[in-house]
Amino acid sequence: METYARELIPRLAAEGVDTVAFVNRQTAGDDLGAGEQVVVPVDASDRVQWVRGEQLMLPGLAARAGCDVVHSLASTGPLRGRFRRVTTVHDLLYRVLPDAHAGLRARGMAVLVPAAARRSHRVLCDSRQTADDLLAHTAVARDRVEVVPLGIAAPTAPGTDAAQLRARLGLGSRRVVLTTGGTRAHKNVARLAAAVEGLPDDDVVLVVTGYPTPQDAALAGRARVVRTPLLPRADLDGLYGLAEVVVAPSLAEGFGLPVLEAMVRGVPVACSAGGALGEVAGDAAATFDPLDVASIREAVAALLGDPARREALAVAGRARAATYTWERTAALTVAAYARALAA
Image (cartoon, rainbow, N blue to C red; front, top):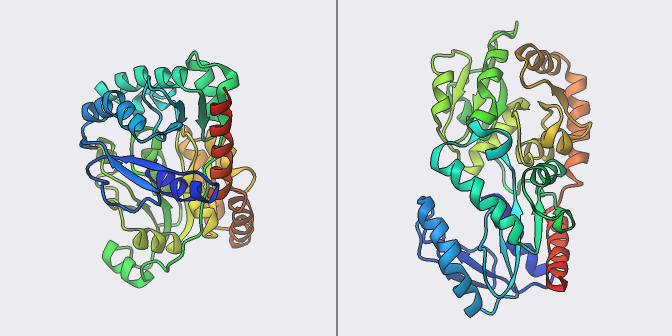
């Protein structure tokens, strides 16, 4: 969602939109490409403050700023205000895969997401899958829901040197299979780790990036898994350069940016069949059943053992990624603003 915000906001100006970015205390002062910035005095890490800021503070701040449209970028939004409301709903994981969220957050999402969808003049979804989930599990009107895919941009700077990364992460000369995005339950990383450990080639290592979660316990002690924390962009770019295959084994997603991040860099992808990942990947990735360790292992082994297939998917992936641009995302978003204003 942060990537979405940082990529979309500056491109709205190119579409002729005057923007005001309402930001939390931690983001205050960051150059987001908006024409104006207003700080909402909340701590981004405190969900209660987040909700209070969005529901109680934002309507007045937006009114004073003269906003015609308030676009909420993170699945929830203000339920009142004398402006048009547009909300981007990124996924319905709290509903379709409850293990992805827990406790108070899950209960909060179950209230706030449907309420924001019902009260918005337009609801934007990253994928057809998310739109279908939204319509199935909320009372939002179908004619107010639009699919606005996210985009991807090629890296503009070189990644960290391969030898440096190999030494720092203890990869040695092993072949790298990469998965990004952390280890929350829906990311299905434990099955991927089991699949890699069962490969006949013992010179393969799975690198798992992303913020820590309780699911990391399932990776502890696995000799063929290297777990990294969140990485600087240069290090992540370097890892994409090292990887022979990027794997996205999620049980459910709202879109699938890691798939496009790999494709735009020419790295072959293997991902879960169906759902949003299959929608984003099209025929430019190898696919598997994410619930079947043997199916995951077969797809990864087939790519590792077939350089020609890897090259074909690299070419197809670049072509697929080229159809997902942030400029297109911005243009479709501005069209949705116009429909909201005309409602």
